[in-house]
Image (cartoon, rainbow, N blue to C red; front, side, top):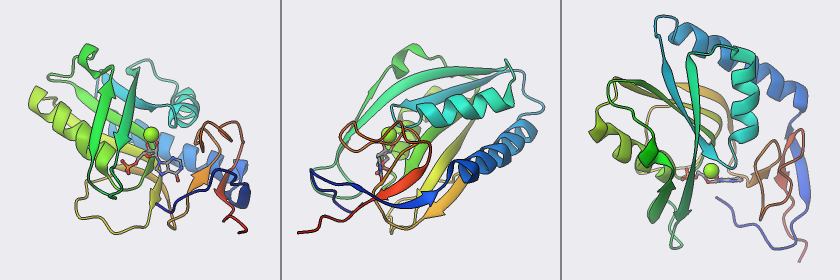
Length: 184
Ligand code: IMP
Ligand code: MG
């Protein structure tokens, strides 16, 4: 991920609200089809970035068998792209044994967050684990996981809007934009 400065302003719009909406419709269709035979799906949404995405996606899907849980994942990368430690808060209270589990995140960058989720959940023997991610950055990764439901790939920009923030800013934007490179 490119570093963003303290005073970064919004740069180029990468996805308009209408483009995001059509991605959500595509994902809603794929998810509904994939889980047509499931009675219950445990959805785990990673706060805070994925909340806007997940809430709008599951409003579209509109099926009570998707049981939505929110957890917090904070990563401390120690200056290294795909290493560091991940702190997960709220997962202990979700029972996944024998269940279909769907992890929902806003963006796939180094992959540390998703790898941490898998490492935590797999030993609890869920029936299936799938992933749904709105934005996948095109970056080199030493370790990758399969993304079952993928919105769109983007170049290696730091992006904001539609729930994604920069130091708490810009989550409210109804579109997704890159941050402007600092002028000096
Ligand atoms: P990963 O663990 O490096 O894959 O990073 C995933 C998490 O980092 C996402 O859930 C986001 O919270 C955050 N993140 C990564 N890239 C961006 C970005 O461009 N904008 C905002 N948040 C980002
Ligand atoms: Mg996140």
